[in-house]
Length: 475
Image 1 (cartoon, rainbow, N blue to C red):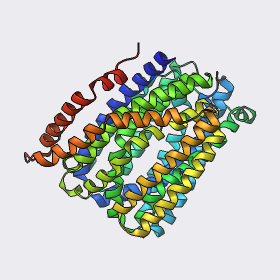
Image 2: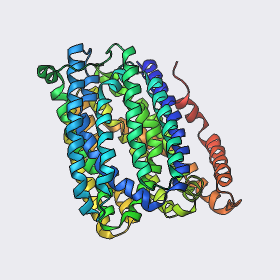
Image 3: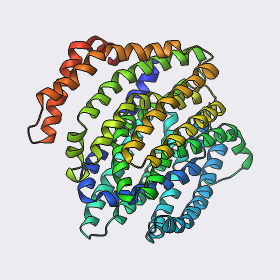
């Protein structure tokens, strides 16, 4: 089981790494082409796009992954349902943009809504083709499609930027990306066992996935408000420019999560679905240890080198992002571990428990977000998020171990303590060395390399055996 799981994870990780390298390169260019206020506009509308996209999936992807086989009638019924669903949601979103005009006191949102509505429709249509590829762990195929779309849309943005059209270029990029991605995923699904979906609908077929998808969908709803209320409130009460800075810092903090856990999660459910609880628990604890071994040095490096990271990637106009990165880096290990929990709830066929635990965590996060907004600065909001995610972590893993694994969580927390303790010398010495050496060559990228070499040297001295043991390929 371990060999199969980590082989699937490896494929997903390599594929996602290629995509994220391209996205980082694109982001470096976009950050110098567009202002924080323009990115704030994108962030202010994207937070609502994410909400409407929840309805476009409705938990159908993990529900389809939970099935041992997918018949053609079910495949076609779900695909046809997503077509109708996408059209309805796209139309509702466009009507909603007129309320955004009032909320943000900007009449341009209804114009942006035309492209975004079409984006939502095509995003909805990818549900069945993407699931078909995930079931067979064809992560390389998905990555190649995303890479092709990223490259093509990047050159389109560069070309349109010469026309000085402003922020609508980034809106159009999302629209074009969604069309290209759907067409390529649809074509690729032809080579899977699920096959090419066609237009045909039988309502009784949907009932096969409704129980699982309903609770998954409800979890996605509460998780949305837990993860996005900060953007909504910052845009309204602290301003679009502050939202642009906050969103960019949060986006940068999430890149390690996207690279690792978002690559790992699609591989977990197809491999572990239907396995015995004891085996799933064993694989869970192995994976968590590996994630902690990787995430703690990443968090340390980002927290210490936040200024140079921001200057290298975004330029000096984004210098306000740096203090936020230093704060948010503290929860990278917590976020990285927490982000995998949903896949284990799904593998254990516990969508109801996933929803209940997520709802409790959402209440905690929302309360701290409101507190942060009340305190009045994005830095205080970031601190409140660190506290809330840590509490949510404890709640969700209590539910996972007690009610899903039916086991004690002592071994899990013992792993966290052991890994953290073994990193303690590096956690103490690295900041001291960085402070006293005062690396400052005048070129932020060179400073990052020098600082990274110091960290690697310390890891080699104090943690070489642990790193080799946990990160070596599975035989």
